[in-house]
Image (cartoon, rainbow, N blue to C red):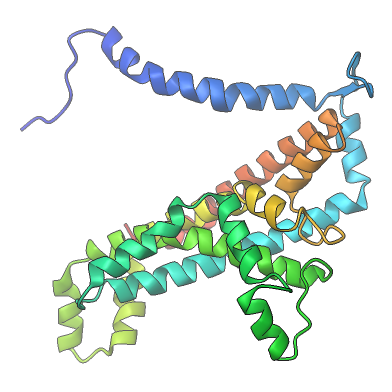
Length: 293
């Protein structure tokens, strides 16, 4: 049976694609082209005149030691958040996939954090870890830990990592759970009959069958940590203390909004876009080889 879609005219497929193409053009490609053009310009302090300076904004960036520090902070932050959110998402999905009483209720509650806005998630963790009022801050201080993320850069990084991880776990949980439910139970039961223990069944059968889902989530999580954590960092720490939590996306925002350096900020956004595209290409080039479809 032929299941191909047949259109009465040539114009109809293009008309159906037009809304999505228009949205992509207006909200993605046009801003990207504007940022690229802006990165070659310099404005005066009052925004009255603009000068084309070629690659001067990029040259200034690569002479700035703070920019290299922000790159290191970003990669550290992205690696930890992606690892933790994927790990806990997989753990919770494996637990929720079991046939237990009230499993649907647990799954529903695990979905909810994804609906929380990044700034709201950040505020929740600020309240819980606020040195004077937070419950977890009191527990840490009772354990002899001098907890104050407003003054300690490492503690501030831990705070934003926890908030960003908590926000992303639900997304990973949802996809891992769908992947687990798509695995034929007969394969797992056959391994159990052969004497394979639960942990061995998971790592030798279940996890390899989840590799397409895992690969997709790795790409999504890396993109999330590089771009979508701006609200969390801005609300929780404002990039401080002393730039300890200033990632590349926050530096773009801070230099453009507070520093009014539109050309330098645009150059940073172009470099950030190139970095993410490069990381995605590397993942497709090397990580996808281990994916079993």
